[in-house]
Length: 586
Figure 1 (cartoon, helix red, strand yellow):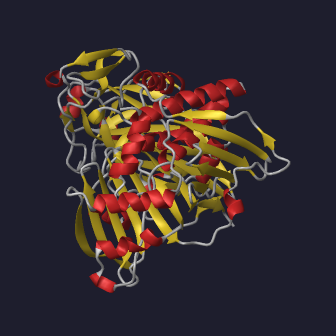
Figure 2 (figure 1 turned 90 degrees about the vertical axis):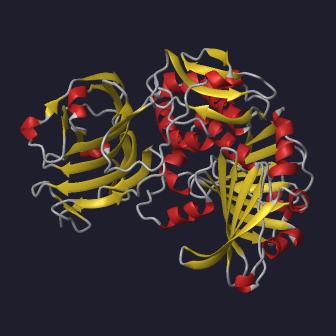
């Protein structure tokens, strides 16, 4: 099935009662997601980094593609006041009468620092902005398959044509038709989730299931107006919130004409047919070679790239590439993302490249089954591809969910390590910072003697790496050998005999000048980046009495704690940003 056919299928089959677009991997059930939102320890968003991304030609092309790919297809609905006796039919009724709509969209995990997309819809056109990331305005004409993006401060504009997108003369009318059609199909099932608390508001939930998608709607139990919609489709996830229907709009807001006096750049094309296996492999090679020191990315879904994008943008700025080279690089990443976004195979694809180095010819990193094929395509670590019978595919992965940080170290069949991490930043009198990473290993490959890790600061140089355990005297800790493999990346030689004895606490220390931390509005910021994928992450900050600094929040045993993550559903390496909670001593 071609991407255009897939889009048409999405529009006419799987966009059940709404879902702004349809863009992310299933992260859990509706109630699990609701519970997750109540947990503390959410990382700060990173608008400054995303502004960097959106001003870099190469990463802006890829990031724009992600946002556009996500948003050219699906949508949502709303409600009617009926109290706790609300029914699903009553909640969606107002959308059947709506002519315009406004809402915010989050692609993937809301707590990952990803941008919030704000859409205003009228007819076949969408006016899109991304608050906090500049003044770029995007007008999407779904009927003409064309996009206009312009910056009001730079006075610049550019058109983009969409190839492979079916014409949608009226978005709202199309959505209404989809809702009516799906309600009439026997496979469409709605479950009442009952009353819940969401951010202090009493809501009633409905879970709508279809063979190809799952939509959860949370509506205000008193007014019946929807407050949140979550859509999981295949391996994608999209959240819609702050919805309003029949809002007042002006035709001029949706004009596809470039304002007078603007510089118009050469028109580009987003080809939805470009997401081939070959393009996917080119993207894997590019990300490993140019941006990850020879290592494959932690994930290959759209939401995974959104987490990688800040680091990609930073490195791209340091490469001193020409404008043409940046654009070519961005298009490579764009086409790479299209492969999983509009996946054309049967069932689900599997990615197992986390922790794998480019060139490992015997290690399978990705496999999928093409449409109507009796065999599967398997991509290996050197990026060669083989056709493999389904019964000969690699063994299923053990679940990574539910790893208990207190359960101790265990080996598994996955290629990478997983742990929990605690960071200690200590401000010294010479305006430097002593950094200690305390990494507790929880899972690792059988008989693995080398641990690859990435420091959160590319310029940092480890001064010592020790292997210990809680309660073990410092003099009994083992000093480990380490080798630099790239900017900020190292291989640590692990003594297997000590791991088997329970010595799984890795202590890594380095120093950095205080001015190497980002200073914004008088506050020092630190990126929350773990050495390896971890299921929990904590930051502690202390100050030397002679440093000239003091803590801005009350300490416990001399250490302030500005950030503690909840135990993650799956291992992660990025937890956003936080401040060092210090200020000049008054």
